[in-house]
Image (cartoon, rainbow, N blue to C red):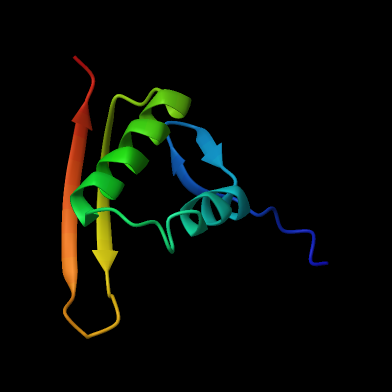
Length: 78
């Protein structure tokens, strides 16, 4: 162990645990849904948990077959 914290995405003095985020994203690996729906689900879940002022999620999908798709969704607090 190096003693370095496992931490990522420091925004507004909030720190999210990288391992938990990676494990959450792995849940969608074999999820049968459209890319847009999956990206919106991730945004909705993260907004519900973190309550940010704004958030942008970019889903970079590379499925088998080689056609890459990027889906960008944004949230701004009303």
